[in-house]
Length: 374
Image (cartoon, one colour):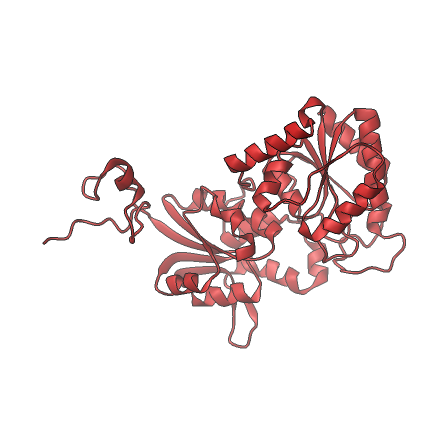
């Protein structure tokens, strides 16, 4: 028996089961009108923190600008895998598992780009067979190195605080430089799944959120790495009172698992009416609730990148981290207290008052008011 023609280079080819065109139309490779040959195979490695994984999705538009008919494989840490799993620009999202390593060991790519400096990411990049590598790898002695000159600046910024503080570029600009992409910016891609959107709408109906506008989300946490990355509880309480009194706005209190206690502390101190968004079962459910809001007040955290990806108006309150690295996409403003040590990247600080305490409620409210009017 003669084996049928197989288009192994087709985007729809799976190998261990029928492809989608065959299941839908009964076609075979020979003469298939949906044959979509791949010209370039690229592997992206970005494993780490959920916020960084999410904002790195902005690089996908640049990849498509540079490489027509590209096939993109992205390896991601399991905790952040849901952020890329449903992305329509990623042909093959893979979690970092033993099965993934076995699969990648037998494949070869035209380009491997590792945007991640974490030990497991740089070690993975060294295992990948590719005609070209960009980003970061790892020497036998454990030293991280830059594969291409365009990656060196980001590596230096990770090693020395003075380079970090002197940086004038956004995170997205650095990632495009590592890739060697044109300067055109692309959005952060945030997945909103239909069944999650339905749950969010049911939540909005239950709490009558649509009966009054604007709906303003206060994202009150910022993780647990930086002691003073969060704005003060008093600041959020006073801001909510002014939003309620002067704008008649609906206030939604947002927080993630790492900030559950913080969320409870803020709500215990609240005097204005509010709606508790609750601790969501997944990041995808959090996105759908976030999407109900018209405007978000947040720190430099996961919620910031999600709000920007959803096209929301955003006020970002920044202290010990770099304001320069944040791309606001023209959707809002960054506010900082007046102190000379901003962007120190210290996880703990003994100054009193510290940077986030110096952020005045009136300044934040005036920006909320302006964005609501806009």
